[in-house]
Image (cartoon, rainbow, N blue to C red; front, side):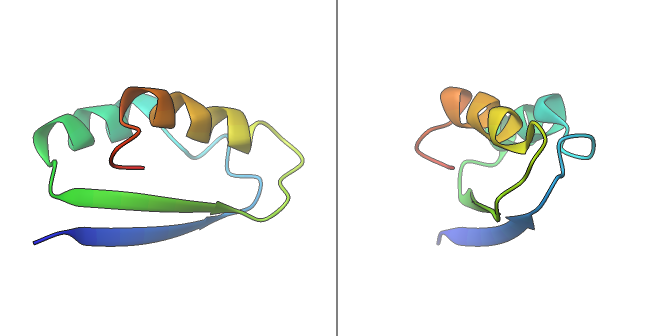
Amino acid sequence: MKVVIINPCYNEADRLDVNKFIDYLSQNTHLHFLFVDDGSTNNTSRIINQILSKFSSLI
């Protein structure tokens, strides 16, 4: 069974921990994350793209 967690994001660059997401996703491949960036003005999209580059099938 697939589980999708929707994460609304607005200027969350300081709160999104790339390493924690990568560690978690490497152990839990049944889980998917959907990040919705609502026009952030900081590096939120860059952080999301770093996670996406490691787990594109789960993000």
